[in-house]
Figure 1: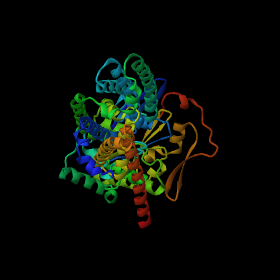
Figure 2: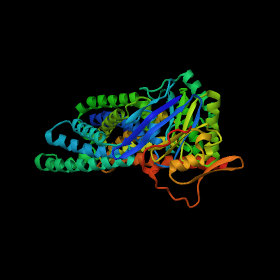
Figure 3: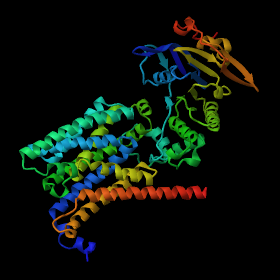
Figure 4: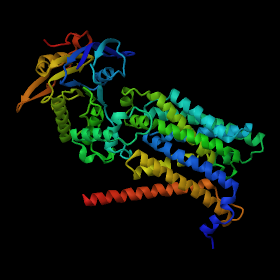
Length: 263
Length: 293
């Protein structure tokens, strides 16, 4: 479960988020969509407690939060195996050197198997592909069995096949374990087949609801301030900026939030 | 003909008190530097390590001027600089390097002043050479016990901070979410790093101590996939280089009578050769994997 109420976050001279509201029931697969600089990472960091909001509140329920950060760059020579990274998800916050523990090893093996990473568990993590590293970071985030998983741009810099694999893995976790997943991305198209909730950020404002409610030409055009087309191709929904679209510099671009939820 | 075995067993090498002190302090500096060095490479703070070592030379030269034990001077200045770096520092690598560079420049300026005063106001005419390139065979025996205690303290800190430092190396935000005070751990690590560089600066000199800090660690992480084994391998390389260097420097008095070669040269040469060898073996392993695949 995740509830965000009237959340405003800013830095000196830069109001990043303004009156953001949304509620995700347990087991939701939600895309947090927006262009670069729209405030996705700021929202995630506020939910995680790394940033203090100016106004509003965040409720995450019981069970802890797992987090996969943006642009993890694991050095190719980093002397850590994939399983070591997952094990640090269990007790990396504790002081001292970990002692051999059968239960710790079982938990790591089980998590690696769940994310389909058992075959490269003993390889140096920096040698893995981008998609494989994302699997390991997801296993790291989930090994303590949190009920809420936040991922910051996990699909960035991945090839098409890896994108599909990571999305399928997240969908499986939501279906099988009823975890609530909030994934930020600047392109919603790869997520459309699996997400059932969406939070759209643009110019500090937000729109939220089910995919059917939000992914509509009128709603997105209103949010962005210029015309957005929502089209269907071979049964898939695609969101594209209309050819030759000029930004509409109406009061929507600078004024107060008019659209915060869709009836 | 020169026989290493006879040379070691004959009265001389192991009966020389200066060698005892060099082996003990050099060995402890080697182990501490190797283990701290693995964390340094993981955290991409090699430049900070080099800067701290160079800055510690201001403490070493001040100690000569005021008649204090060199360990106190090197350690105090390295710790002061480490605290300064953390206070004004940043988690961004680029910004961290800028801060290290600025503090390094200021530290070397102070070193230049103290070295000038050492030469002009005391009898330490060899001060620059001792501070910058080490004085392994001239270390006072009474320095040995304090140096060993300081080394034990640094190793205890490494054990204590082992998991948090690894977690922060993956991502500082994840560590913060898990309740770790990333800034405090960063400061404790820098203080541990300052102990390592102070010990190695005292033995092989401020300028060359980076070789002992980074070289064995950089070699070990090429050969190992696990942090613990990387630390063991790095320690073995560092000890071998240090003790081997002491042995060769001692032996060199017999190669060119009355003109022994500097021990620091041998230590960094061995470390450099080990690093080259690790590149060759990892390249060969990569080639074999490619051919097998």
